[in-house]
Image (cartoon, rainbow over all chains, first blue to last red; front, top):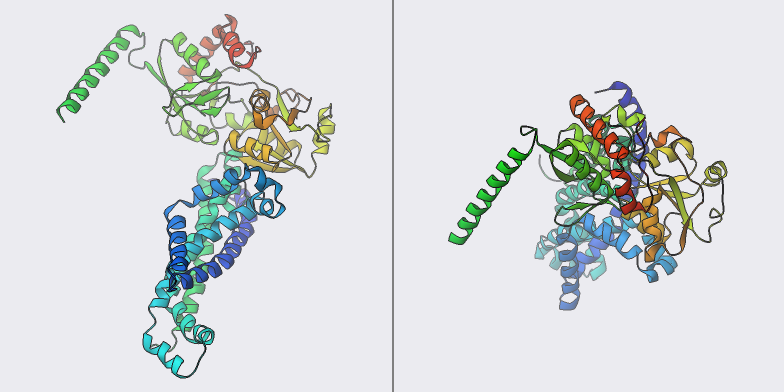
Length: 228
Length: 273
């Protein structure tokens, strides 16, 4: 380990930290809502609706994120109708936007599976009781089903969040300068692979430690009625 | 099962026969194998097909060198920015991958004498206002705030970081990816060696593009290297002496110049000092 290199690498890689955070936050914000919608669709009695959600989840969970990124960024970027459409090109033309889209679509598939598990775990009696009180479907979902499903799904969802943080590193392959992007650039300038990637790894570990702690705190709050 | 076993036997005896044949023919039987790291995705320097066969100028130089050294060669394909780390990890003996000799790289590995040098150039869209620029200083200042694509880990990337730091630099793992983004308009200019870009301009994707008529040579900025050399592990001084001697002879007798004519339609060989 070369200390001088460490002092050079830490601020350089820290520059990538905010972009890693933005990629994570934006894709989770989109992916969670999309995943929730897909989970509800999945439980629909209409077979076309539940079939679509099932197919979506199969396709996005069954193909590697890196392949999805390359398909969206390089693949769609070659089609002239995508390049000529201002909205599509705003998404596909920019590395960061494209990475957010791919990460969001990918995490939505996993989130839908996790939330579906949470939703079906809710005892029928609770829902019937809410119905008996005269709650509407929406109110029932907001007050009973959703909060209980989230409480059930939170440990598994925390896991998914950690995977999204790590998944952002793949954005470096489509020119996005997040932590790994800066690390690769610094590696080719200094060839100090050990130092540079050890620090990059530590930064990811730091982000995930903070994230895991936050999830644990939320979990503790949601289950505060339970004996410890 | 039986036929498979037979095939294995045949293969083994074939391998043994080859081994003995080379053993008899080679002067350096004990060290008669030379593995060469090359990028494999950098036409017309180094192109690898799906079966791992490498063609191009690098392959020709490698084969000429091995014939001269009376050694048996095989190529190992590896992404450009991983070539030096892999050489240090002894995954192959030498690098032949159009690699420019630079001070930074010399801290990591040894180089043979430079045996070739190419002009480095920018490519832009024909209707770009950079297209008509004629001198390097104007070109570098007018890149301010524009997106420029380079390949990661190349001298071009280092040159841009040093001389045009106000440009927005996009780095790519392969030249193909950079050219896709140039064609789609994600980058306004690309900086690479003239041969690689010439290849792009000849393709349908490159029809709306042209060179900026400025040749950037290593005499303008030493970041761009001391010509192109063979990368050799630092401790391998005996091999370096032999490779230097062989390369000088190959340049002097015109063999490398001839290979260069085949791939670049021009002689880029660099005579030994």
